[in-house]
Image (cartoon, rainbow, N blue to C red; front, side, top):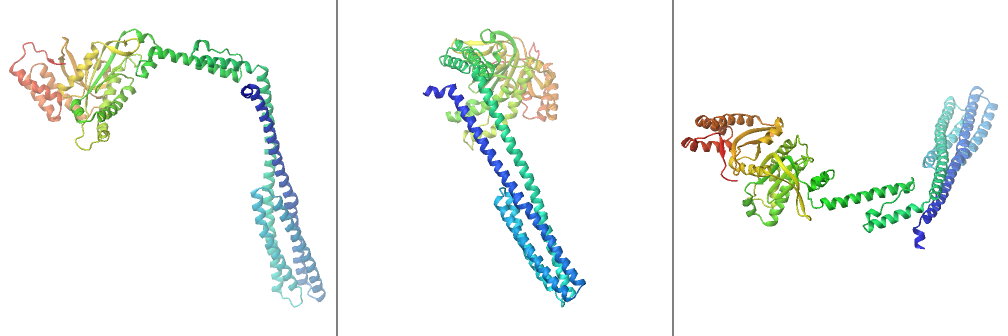
Length: 566
């Protein structure tokens, strides 16, 4: 029995019952609208139109009363007086009968009216009719008083003025009735159209649904549903290769079958992703490698830009904070500093204590702009540092002795090996090579020169005119014989401040003298640079070397400084 209620047959039966109920509802709604229209028509026929005729008759009677008064004025004798009184009484009697009928018509209208507009309009007419009845009684009395030989011209004028007053009230009420009649007629026509349209629409819809149901049943509605159920059970059992459902129709069930097969293909793809890339941390790596799965298992050489950053005096900061507070601080720091890297197509390889290692490499970034992207990300990190330090008191919960966070960055561009490293159960997509080590060493070289952002010559050349830099020095790092030119990354192109530009020009002059071993001129230039920027680290560093170089001049001086530590 329960299976029957879940079957398609029951659903069709339910739809049929629903259609019958819909038709019944349509009939009831149409009947209600028809009754509404009927009552509106009765309001017009038995109330408004007769009421308008009654007012027209009243105007005729009032005109007769006015004529009677005029006749007496022109023929002031006893016979005219008697005629005047008799006609006035007859006319007044007739007027009261008309007003009584008008009252009855108005009451009928209030009974038949169905809309709020009609009820309000009839409610306004009732006091107007009462006022008209009162004014007509005054007219009768004034006219009767005027029908005497002793009546003077003033009394006659009062009667005429009262007749005009009744005329005005009658006209006002007639205008109100006409407006009401027009409005009620328009609403009646609209309701007739609504009733007709609703009936046609509901019957058409029911007919269309009935035809569609017949078509679905004739095409074998049950068979594709059973196939879908079997496919769903196969998916639940994990048998994705056996779950495909053949599309046998082009109706709604066929659409469901297509959607099911598309979902099945997505599940298969997700299984392949889980099997091959489930070990990767950064989801962008997975998304980027789907179109080139060979990168996941086979290393290859590519040109990449490497990024290393480290927090200045992190050990001192860590010693001052509780473990949980330190974790909160580092989580906040990594969240802020990782965002520019991701926004500019960089891949974060790993977090090493307080350090960040990232890289830019195809296909994740444009090979022609990857160095520019890396520089832009580093500069944005530096720009975010002040705002982050303002948040540090809230993060660590301190208001005094709050640690200040600063960092150093090294960028290096060169050939690396890109691929997966690790075991079969856990792998990491990473880069390897001397460029990686060079970026790490550049980050450390910042300590020597008092800088924040250092890049090598390859990064400088690859970024080209997109960045503003100054040549700091040419060094030979531990473990490498080839000299390395290092540059301070200062700004993106066009964003270098005027005072910075002046500093860089003076420093460049000093560096040129320094490289030629002209120690006196170099010393003057570096001191001038410090005059422009007293905290300029590169100027202080090179200036501090000059006394020793002057005292013990190198025999093979080429301007290359030998670093003694990594």
